[in-house]
Each structure stands twice: as structure tokens, then as C-alpha cells.
Amino acid sequence: MTEKIIGTKDSNPDLFIDNIYPIYIVNSVKNIELTYFSWNVTVNNNISTDYYYCLDTINNEAFGHWVYESALYLVVYNKLKLIYPNIKLYILNKKNYKFSYFKAFDINIDDIVYSLPKNNIVLFNKYITLTSLDLLNLENTYNLYLENYYNSLIVKCKPIEKYYDIVYFPRGVLENYKGNDRVIFNQDSIISLVESYNNSLIYHTDNTKNLIDQINIVKQAKILILDYGSSFIVNSFFCSNQTIIILGYDNLHTDYTSGKLIINNCVKRNNTIIFIERLPHPLLLFSLDEIKELIDNYINI
Image (cartoon, rainbow, N blue to C red; front, side, top):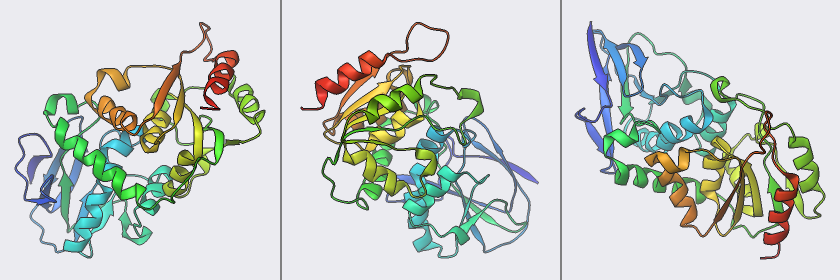
């Protein structure tokens, strides 16, 4: 058996999709080890004509990471399908958030597999994580990936006017990454505050079956309230001409190239982003008075 390191900066691709997406083709993959910088692949000498596209990185169980490290390439899978009509999408586990993206990209559930047969040909893309992008010098390329991802989904959305004055996405409780899970202890009070405004909506993203439906709701909000983290980087990316209130503040969008690019794309679509820092309290709490003041300041703009 032979070991190969796939998707690194120095890997030589076997083909390009749209001249910007390098694709690496590996025959007879026996095992795939996920690292922070590559797929480490063990191969044998079997012969096959069955193609598979490997999507997941080491961070695939963290929603925001999966979106910008894996889902970003679903547009590539659909293009590979034109070259290899029978190609399957290989993922490591069943997560509802993954299936909401598969539906958005019109991927047939029968084309998804969770293990590789003994005989296979596996295709990989460039291995880029939210943290490794800083080391790869691929800022311009990754920004093109973001633009293609945005365009491929936004074209499926309705032409939308701002229907709601306020939309709040409470923090979800399903499939949260255990290493970064947290509870907003006064979330019910925030929900009650938002509901006190006539033209408001509380939307629980745990119920999303198709990402396009969620994007449509995002774009209907004059004011959108999200918590910092994956909800912030995933949902605000699709906003335009909106006020976005973010509960919490951290360094993802300031210290990492990937986060900067994601949020810069949001800002260039004429959005205003306002951060509310947590209260000085052992529990994760946010000031209702501060939230209300911001809503009242921006609701009539």
C-alpha cells in the first residue's frame, strides 16, 4: 500500500474546474485520515471506474467550518457531475445542516454515500480550512470561491423586499459542536422583546430543511439579530441593505483571513453590522435595554 498527502499547497492537481478549482484524483483509496492541513490517503492497487468526491475536512462537525470548508465546493460537485455523471458525494456523517445544503444545491440523496467501496476513484479539492488559509497565500482564490458560492445560491432565491422589521434567529440546540457549545441564558427574554414589535419574526434554524428557505427569510429582514459564531458568518453573508445586530464579539472576523473575507463580502453588500458585547456576568447574558435601543434606532431607517 502507498500513502499520499492530498490537497496541500504543493500538491499537483490532475484537472481544474473553471480554471480555479484544482481537483486531485486518487485511485483505490483504502483509508482517509483527516488532518488540519490535508487528507492523508492510503491506497492499494484495485481497479475501478466508480467515482466519488470527498468533501469533509477535519472540522466537518462544526457547522460554520463545514459551510466554508466543504459546502463551498458543492458548486464544484455539480460541475464534476457533468464530467462524471455517476459520481457520488462522499461525506463522513449524517447531519441535518448538510442535507439542507444538499437540497439547496439540488443534490440527489441517492448520490450521497457514507463509506467507500473497496474499488473506487476518489476526487479531492484543495484542502482549505478557516484557520489554514492564513498559511496558504490563497486569499484571492478563496474570495472567488466565496463569490461563486454566493451567486450559485442567491440566484435560486426569490426577489425579496424587506417584509419584516425584525427577525431573530435564536441560538440552535441541535447538532451544535460540543467543543464550542454555549447557552444564551436570557434568550427567552430576547425572544419576548423581539415579539413585542408588531412586524417581527422568530425563526429557529434547527427547523431548516432547505437552505434556500432560510436565505429567503434572512433577506426579508430589515433588522436581523444573530449570535456570534456560525450563525453570524453563515447568515449575514447573504444579507444586503440590512442592519445586522450580533450578540457577542470574538476574533474570527478580525484575526483570520477567512473570517475577514466572509464579512467583507457582507459589508460590501451595503450592510451595517453592530456588535453587542456580553454583560460582565459569569453567565452568557446580553442587555435587553441595549438591544431595544438599537432596534428603535434602526427600525425606521
